[in-house]
Length: 330
View 1 (cartoon, rainbow, N blue to C red):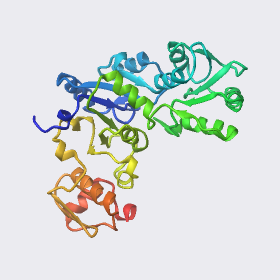
View 2 (cartoon, one colour; view 1 turned 135 degrees about the horizontal axis):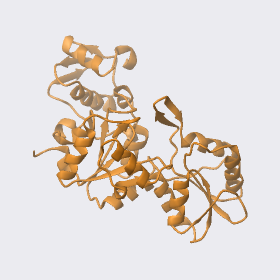
View 3 (cartoon, rainbow, N blue to C red; view 1 turned 90 degrees about the horizontal axis):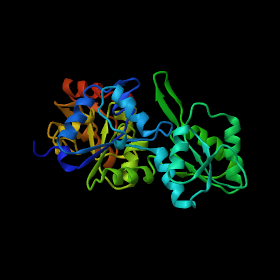
View 4 (cartoon, one colour; view 1 turned 180 degrees about the vertical axis):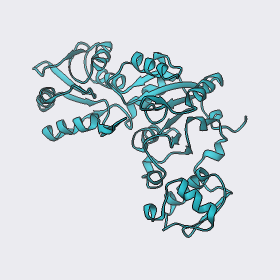
């Protein structure tokens, strides 16, 4: 089908949690959609800020959810962090690992030597989330950073989504070291450029498209390297947060989920839509609520949204479907 969003790219750089799966289940329709993407000759690359698992473990987890995945299709922030270290350090340099064994393995893979103790030979600290990180290791990181060691954070995600709700992410632990040192880390993961650049290089893409559910990581990460993005409503961010997005966190396209890539590109693009009118805060029309969202984004991002009023039952139903009550966005 000509004109699909998929026809504009040669690789999808796909986020995981909230985009491909939610908790312990695949997002409905996504496994089949990704298989169809590959069948169309477009590469799929799974791009995750999770630094605690190896590409093999990530691929195994995806496979267990019914999602076709190979370790060679996975890019992690641990890999990106190791590459940043390798760019700055001589082979054999000692690196303090604040993270999982998978992170230590990536550091070894680039010719550096992991340690869990800050000493005179410690050249760098790399920090990624692991659930058993405790005060003593954060203290070692503080000692090393204060002594002048290079500090690399695999990501600065404040929270991670779980079945129990949002829990502290790597960014929360990075903040502890930041407060204790008054230093700032070099960030490897989304939204910083290193992970995105490594993913593009690994996929061999000339025209990649980022697909993700978080404006502050996936979409901002796409903007950081100047490539288009598809924001999906299957995860963390909402229509309300999309309308309020700052310029560097605005996607080029919006869909319900990953399967949206098979829809016409012009349909998914942010901009005015024939079925909807948004003038002076009054919404008129009748059609797909997501089309209304795309039209609202164009207005909100150019002139700002006044208090919205629905003119007619169809407009009222569409705003309600989007969770955009007047009190929420007025």
